[in-house]
Length: 272
Length: 368
Image (cartoon, rainbow over all chains, first blue to last red; front, side, top):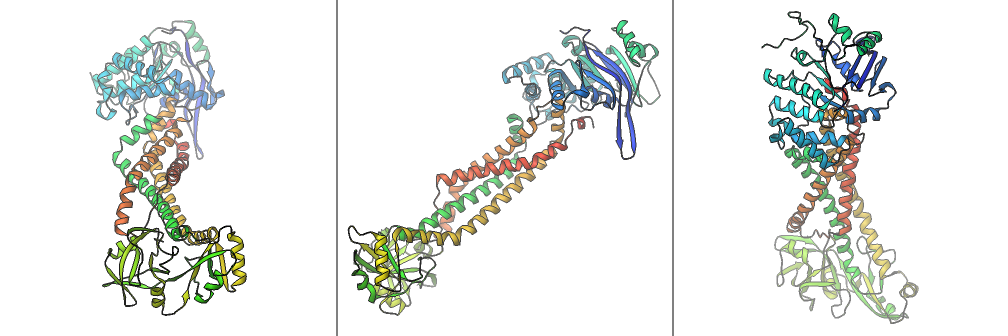
């Protein structure tokens, strides 16, 4: 179990623009955000708000056009692609909306493969896969192909794959969007468990308001700008560097929830 | 990367089958061409190689049997025999008449030789006996199969009926096969008495063939002499100059077809598995993993294709020999290894050509 206080990432005034022809899209504007191990950080925002771009920057897949993103103490702007690849393999886990399992590989092989990316030997990788499958109660699916699984089972496999290398940072993009209500609840609980039991920092971009229930912090992103409730903005470390310092000095562990936004069309409320 | 490549093959059985079949056919084609080449190369010169004479004497400017004409007169026989170092000289008349059997007709490379002597006849008999009289003929085994004749059957050349008394081997030159009759019979077929194509010369003990050649050429003007080795080389070179370019052209087409098939297949596979590759990049796959997977995938296809090809090859050979008995194939281990190596090189070359597509796959695609 890692120290809950360990800073996993640090984003400072990070912006990301995309140019297309003469036009420029400001996908993320001046985002300041910290992530610590053991917490679940939820990014709420409508489609096109910049959630995915923010996740991509945290994954080191794209670099900020302004500001800085530090992963595990390394500024990603200064890291070569191979170093970022090693960081992703060894210290990060990924969960996707549409699971992105390798459909030609069996369940166990899906979980083993990412460990092989992290240069784990075959035998320990298989042991770890078995262990995770037992924890996530999917051991009976070990020899099946993803096409033979339900969506809920696929997401469990995806979670097992994501935590196989004991990541410090788990990035989940709409992890419940393709799931039915009950399956979504299970996944939400599992993500919370990942943070609590594996000690990783879970960053979850979602429309799903249920994620608020398990979130250590809830952030909103609109038009590339991170916002939140009045208390959330400061408490969650959103905003300026000074705000972030206040957050670190204050009650970092308090769960802050944004007010639900019914009828705005910005967020999807999943029915009871 | 082995696991992913293997599963990729396993999960696309129809494509796997078609690709392996295509590679196998290319491999079989290359193997068959090489085996035919070896068979033709051996068959074309076996008569020369196994004749056992020391010096071949032909008409001046004639250098080989396969694509040359040589006519001499019987009058020079004694002159050759009287050369210092010559033990004996045996005349041979070579003609290209049509051989008939009922309605069937085929051209035969007819060698008339002195059947009472050791040299000039069939190098080896598969069945029956050698020529004993002017009414006998020994036919190449493949030719006999093609004409559907056996020992004791009658054939005719220029209206002369001849009885098949033996079947020879080592006398199949692919485009033409040998037949053997007495020298007198060959001369009667030609309609010119005292006609000879060449002399097979035996050197006396201790005589050096090179010197013997010079002495014969000096003593008998209008002749060209060759030691056994030189004459064999001349004929091989002649055969290769006519056959090898065609063989290489067909083999080259096979290689190009196989490269195109594999490159297309690998390209399509990369496009189809684009999402997988993007996910792998996101999940931190080592730099060499993606190209390595493609290389292994291509290698597996090539090896499976080769294995299937090697399995099919004996069947194809037996089928071809049934349909065209004159096609003589000789498969050698170096040729098999060459085809295996070529298939692997083509497979990996195709993989290299296809790997460029991997550069256009971005990790960010996983979020699209």
